[in-house]
Length: 252
Length: 180
Image (cartoon, rainbow over all chains, first blue to last red):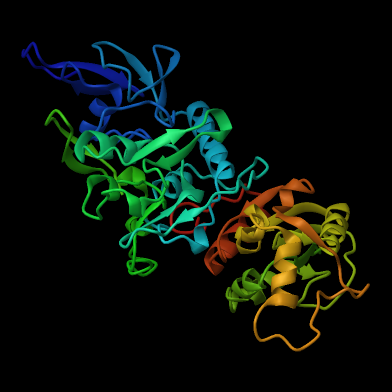
C-alpha cells in the first residue's frame, strides 16, 4: 500500500495489483493509465465507450462486466489476466474471425491490425467455429479511401469518429443480430457520394482492415509493422482521452 | 531402440508453400530424421497413408478428392495437424466462396478473353468434382493441433514439431505465431 494522504488518491485492485484512479474513470481507463493492459477492441480513448466487443470483460467483485463501461470505484477487486477470462476472450475473437472474411495473408492491414494482434497475444491457434463466409462487398468508389466490409467487426469506432469528431455522420449500422452491418450514409450507399475525406478522423481509426487509404498498401515491410516487434499488450502509447485525462492506449 | 515416429504429410487445396517452409528447417531435417520417418508425403511419393503417429495437412478442402484424402489421414493418424492459413480457415482458395461456382468455371474456361476456340469447362471423369465452397479442414474431420501462418515460418514448424515429439503442448509465442 502506498502511503499518501491526498484524499483524491483512491485505488482498486486488478489481479492483486493496486490501480489508482480519478473519479469518473472507467476500470479500463484507470488500468491503461496505470500501465496495466486489459485487452480491448471497440474502446478508443478519444470517443465515448460503447461496450460492444466485450473483449475487455473482467470479473468485478466476482461478476463479469465490460471494464470500458464500468466506473472505477475504490476498493473494487477486479480479475483480468486469468485463464478463465482469457479463454472467454479467445472465444470472442474466434467468433469475430468466423463472422467476417478475415484472410490475413492478403490483407493490407496485416501486422497493423488490432484483431490479429490480440489473437496473437492471446494465442488463438484456430477459428474453432465453422466459417460463415458472409457475402460482403467492397466500396472502391472514393478516390482516396477503400472500404472492405469483409473485415468489419462492428466496433463502431468509425461511426463514433465521424459523428463526434468530424460531425459528418458518414457511417452507421443497419440490420440486427447476425445481419447487422456497416453502411455509408448516402442515398447511393457509396462513399464517393458523401463528403468523406482521407483527412477525417474516421479515416484514421479503423482497428482492422475496413477503412484503408488507397495507394498505401503493403508499404511497410514484414518485420517492421506495428505488431511484428512487440505484442499489443506491450505497446501502450501515452495519449489523452476526450476529457483530457492522460491515459495509455494501444491503437493502430 | 526407440521406434521412430511415423509422419505423413499432404497438400490439399494448398500451394505446397507450407511444405517448402518445412524444408526450410534446413540441416535440422537431419536431426529430425533421427526421430521420425515419413509415410505418405510428397517427399516420399508414397501414395497411400498407412498407420501413422502424426499427419500434417496443408490446404483446405475444395474438391471431392480432398475429402477422401483427409478422411484417409484421419483414419490412419493418431494426431492430425492443420498447417497454414488454407487448412485453418480456407485461405486464399476460400476467397471464391462469395462467388457462384458455375459462374467462376464459365468465366475461367469458357467466356474469358484469350481462350482457345471451343474451350469449355473440363468434364473428365478423372478430375475430382469441385465443392461449392472451400472449407477449413476442421469442418470435415477432427483436428488435434493448428499451426497458423502463410506459410508458418520454418522456426515455427521446428518449434511445433520438437514440442510435439518431446510430448509438450506445442506453443509458438510472439514472433512465431503469424496468420500471414
